[in-house]
Figure 1 (tube, rainbow, N blue to C red):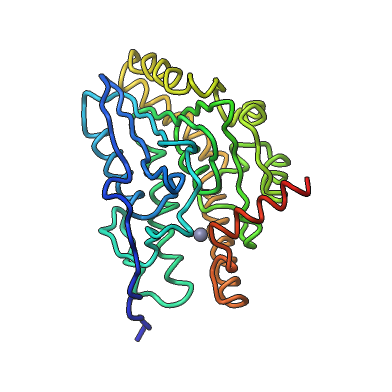
Figure 2 (tube, rainbow, N blue to C red):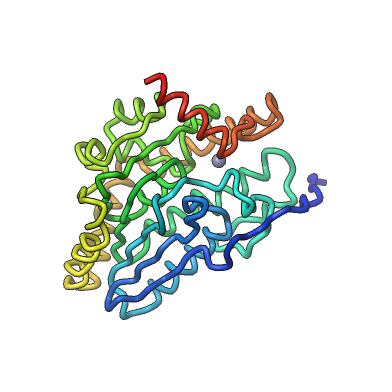
Length: 298
Ligand code: ZN
């Protein structure tokens, strides 16, 4: 019989019951990640709240455009790897047809979990039948990239920066591996291998972001873009985003992500075997300290 394990008793303290809030402003749903205390670190609680918010925005026929934003100084610090609300071991009602991860042994646990909460959810949001805009300020790091990249358009403030430093954990980039679609391959290699911050203006040079505006204009710019989108016909918007998404599929985006997903999980498993920790012992504090050291050296 296949082995199952006792789900680990999770020690979780949520600082909020509403990690995502939604405001409807005319035809625009503003979905805002709301854990500013932890720079909007994405735990499962937030992931499922985001999915609920996208679901409601898609179901509401009065909503024509969705804006994804982050409360506070930073858009997203990435996946939650260190707040008291880190809930990797917690079971949630799944939205895709995956099994529960909490009673699976060894590498099967994360492999199962991340199919749903990272790769699966991101693909689901990317395929939303309404246009989406990410409004990005401050840090957009690792898992945060995935949230910006699933949106159709990205408007960034001048202080925004993008970074995927997970190679430091021995992991070849975050789970939604769009890096080499968002950036030319050699730049994607630089971005990943060096793990450095990329400014909004440099990201714009490669077409990774659509517009860069002063911080104080970010919301207005996103609102202006959303208003223009809302004036377009609903089905035309859906068909058009699907047409471009299909071009990415013809270029192999989905297959590339599936291939990388297995490398990503080989790396998690290797970390666990060698260090006893799937992230090679790195947590939010460790990554921040290593970032500082790298910046100091540069
Ligand atoms: Zn992972």
